[in-house]
Figure 1 (cartoon, helix red, strand yellow):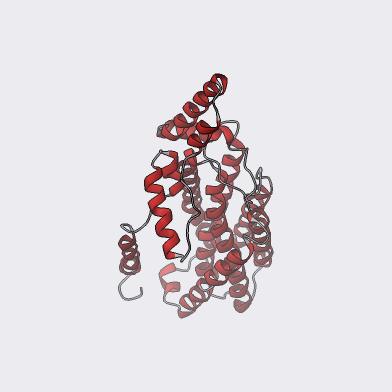
Figure 2 (tube, one colour; figure 1 turned 90 degrees about the vertical axis):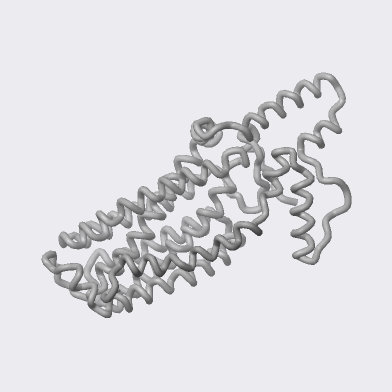
Length: 320
């Protein structure tokens, strides 16, 4: 970056992402989605391919959607009427437009989960990108504030690149810890614990610390916030029914991007203005509130089946 600038760094760093395009053609569609659309034959083909890749066999029988099962079991006229009404309702859920989906996210069954998820996504993005920027702002190791120092001069400091490299390696243990805890302790406990532990790591930075200690604390905080970011992307699709799952996660992620855009005003603006304590306190508040919101999520999704429609989104059964 000192030679070519940040634009070339960004361009070169984005090149490996194009490799993902190679997987687009071989990525299978969701069998659950295909069944909801009545395309059971296409869903069966994908399930059979998955079974072959996993050196397993599908159970004997026919693959049918929930609508077909109910249709075979119900014969009475009254039951047929109820079935018709239920099917019509679920078809509306699966075919609703963009604006209808957005309004459905704020329906009585989903409004609590939606609002809490927006706060958690905002807090995650705000804190994650804020910690990245704090690493560069606090990597000079100076205990005295120098608001007149030029950022370009600081960027030439090799300590900056070293500290950013060290804290970036925190991504790996963060991913491993989230993978080890998400199914053992559940999504809510894992997320909230990491949010609160992140607060513990950041708290000493309210006061100026030695350079090594600052880097170590930021490393620990980066582990925790990486873990919460990973788990929330697991939890978010599980709390929404199939009919609004993509919309719900997409809107929540967009709210998170707003947090990512706001955080530079704190991480850079306050620290440059000799308000490091205020910046850290604000991060502490955002992260703590995010952890509290996780505790108020309506249910834990560990070991639960996914729901298909908004009408039965609360009727989630345990996996047997």
